[in-house]
Amino acid sequence: MKQHRNDLLLAAAVLLLAAAVWFFSRPGGSGAWVVVTVDGQETGRYALDQDWTVTIGEADYNVLEISGGQAAVVEANCGDHTCVRTGWISQEGETIVCLPHRLVIRIQGASGELDVVAR
Image: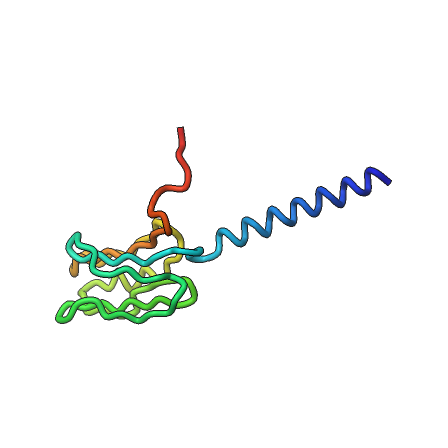
């Protein structure tokens, strides 16, 4: 009987751990930001957990869409459209780059610092 109880406790612990991993690895996570820089200067910061559609620039423009905890450039008038083909990003550190417009879009966590230090 004791063996059966220990098996149930182990199974419950594994399920709890799996739920915690899922919760903390969801797209964007709590407090994540989409940071927009043009020519090295930050021009915008948008919460990843809110839906936005933002046009960046005027003559040279990119349309940034933030939806469902993800961000993507959905339209641009640059020549190569690499930024559009990058697709959706959601994890801290992921970036979208448009070199012709000198645009960098990156996902940044609430603290803006690394989570782990390797030695």
